[in-house]
Length: 400
Image (cartoon, rainbow, N blue to C red; front, side):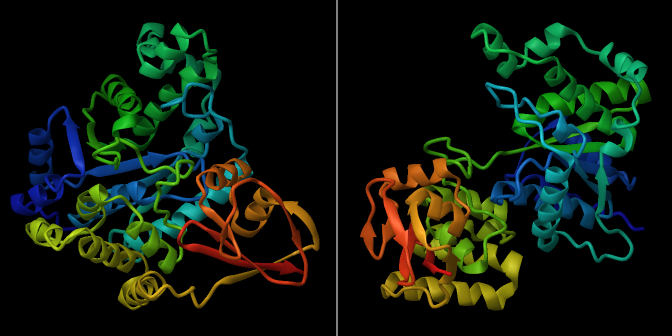
């Protein structure tokens, strides 16, 4: 297979703004990419939720660009490590998922990633791997040998562990094992490079150290950004209502992008489109609304194609510029009876009760056009109720 070694192409990928740092150095990684050697590069993630958002999407778009250079890329699902629970960014132990929950989440993730990567490539398709294949086979003496490469001091120095230690919050022994297991993924697959977010650097470096000690091989760690609001620092998050989720249908995805703060336009342009960087200033100068519309169209096009993206744009214009309701509001039938509004939101739109209460408190929920101020009781009968959450989500509720 021909490996593309053109320095201009490599630089355009690495210097777009997605990559924060490369260890041991970006220049060494560039030289490796220019060597003509076919590299094995992977990204790993625990499928701890059923939906990805645009900050995840940019990782797979970047990995696809490396695949198009001719390199072998691997999408690793931590189906074993998800059962341990990644402590990264947590002040408490992360819930451990069941094998069935993980399997369901992985299926959803693959569907959401599919538009971003060419799984149909006959000569060099992206590979999918699961770390239970090797981690489930480790015996206790194997784990003890791996553990001997790390000290308790190294683990405690992790910021989230240090914080919990100082605040007398429990740190469970299995959480110490997480970077050990994730680090071993690199050894088991014998990789040349790992792609990770800034929050996963510690775990990726654990793998780099194990590769050096057990394989006598240097592993590159390519660290990419976490998409954050440049003013507030807020990350894309479902619980905070700031995410644009890949499971969203075209209209909803387009609307969610248009609802992003104006300062996010350039972030979305850089990370989630592949429009030339030379066009960035021209698009930004269109003004927030038109620039955001241009970016939204490009992103939705990546997932659903140009036709559906244009229809989503037209629906948005009709709904928000002309004040019209969407034409395809989902009808939801529930058993007749009295329910709290958060219960209806959970059944009709899959919101958790805590999310529902937050949205009600923020005056983001309407019943038949009227803002609801409390989690009040409503009665579901044969008479249709129009439920609206935020500016984009609607459902028509009536009894079965």
